[in-house]
Amino acid sequence: MLEIIGLREADLDVYQVFAGSGSMTFAEIREATALPHDELLSILEALTRKGLLARLPGTPKAYAPVQPDVALEAMLSRKDQELAAARLVAERLDQRFRNASVRHSGDLVEVVHGNDRIAERADQLLRKAKQEVTFVDKPPYAQPPTVLHPAERELLERGVRFRGVYDRSALELHDLPTDLEAGLVLGEEARVVARAPVKMILVDQDFGLVPLRSDLPEVRTALVIRRCALLDALGALFGLLWREGLPLRLPAAEQPGVLSVDDARLLALLTTGLPDRSIAKQLGMSYRTFQRRLRNLMTQLGAGTRFQAGLQAAARGWVALPPPDVRE
Image 1 (cartoon, rainbow, N blue to C red):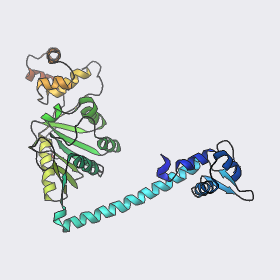
Image 2 (cartoon, rainbow, N blue to C red):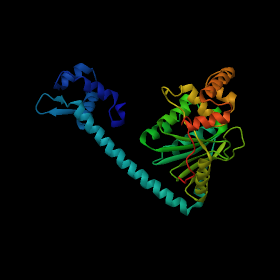
Image 3 (cartoon, rainbow, N blue to C red):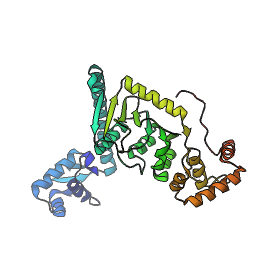
């Protein structure tokens, strides 16, 4: 694990010999490690350069350990500085390539083939995000959407905003607790539309990823689009779908005295227009159990029809209503 700061396993083995021993001569260290003379000398010199050991004056040749909290903290600090400098170089290179792409219009669109390569490219683009990721989610998928994408989890935890529009059919394919709910708990904002015309990922208005075709049963080819009028058009399309969509909010825990988690999930999915049998499947219950839970919920709301149930749930604040039509 410490190889990232230049420490090999052999270095650590030698350094740990000093634990509880204080200073040691070269002969004592060699006896404790059983390493060949030249190999041990090389390791001791490396540990001295890295600040983990101090060479003592005089003879015989002897070394004293530096406390690990001091030495390792200094090494980690240097590594942080190196990484910061590397990021600056990467940003400068990225800016040069962006500027060059304006001069070479053929570089504005990159064609990516194959599910694995598309998934890899999507991960790379997501990890470039600094402010916001917007996406439209619908089948088909390069990889099955069974868990929350690791990049989304990391970015949400860093404060990057995620807004997603889900095609209603996509809700049937995502796992409810490990994917959809996991993202919403971390701060993803989600809305649902009856039908999305195209799937896409937009990153900071700088990059976009869209499948070449949306009418095939699998994603075979995708386009990576850099900042240009086409990317602006995709951003405008996302804005329209976002304003049209109904909010999707799923509970992470039971709200005492209001609704159980299962009833709140049922109600949230019901408002998206998802078919009854699909809702039952997502909730892991039989269709008959779903019907019974729905009847009980309608009785609790004092509603004779689903329409009345929706009005009552909205009036009580049990479902999320779409905000006024404002541009975001």
